[in-house]
Image (cartoon, rainbow, N blue to C red; front, top):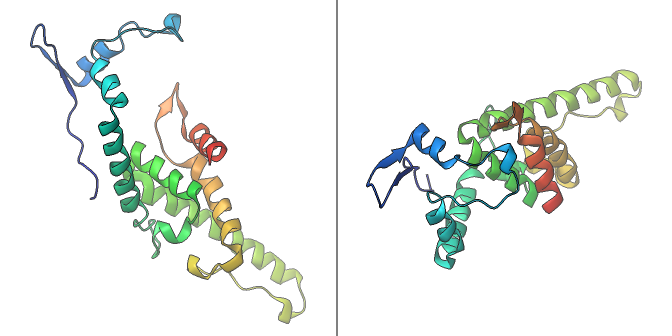
Length: 194
């Protein structure tokens, strides 16, 4: 893949030389961060190096390069059960950003979840066309099913993409906060920003 493989995060105290990782590191990082301290500025020695890195312009440049590489990788994926790349379905910034956001948070689910959204889209559209054709007596006015090749969608592409995105964006499997998926709020935020 075009992006760096994840390595296990750890923290080594300069004072004690003790190495913290996994659940022990997570517990130590969260010390003091509770509902009673919400919106208060707190110091965390373990996070200081990360905060400093985020402010460094060289680090920021690397983040942009890594993000671009990752996006280039993601848009080449083919949704599960389909023959075309994500870039063929998602032409908009919102579509690409939604797939990238999903890949950052739950990379193993991108192909499957987008495949499911496409299944839902085609099932719905096929049913609408079948119902229309049953009602329409004049066979010359019958509609054909939507092409499974997104490159054939022509002027309807943005309409179809929006419909697929509105399903995929809120239903993709992502992390949960208090037992609730963050997918809908993250998707709505992307829609607002883009």
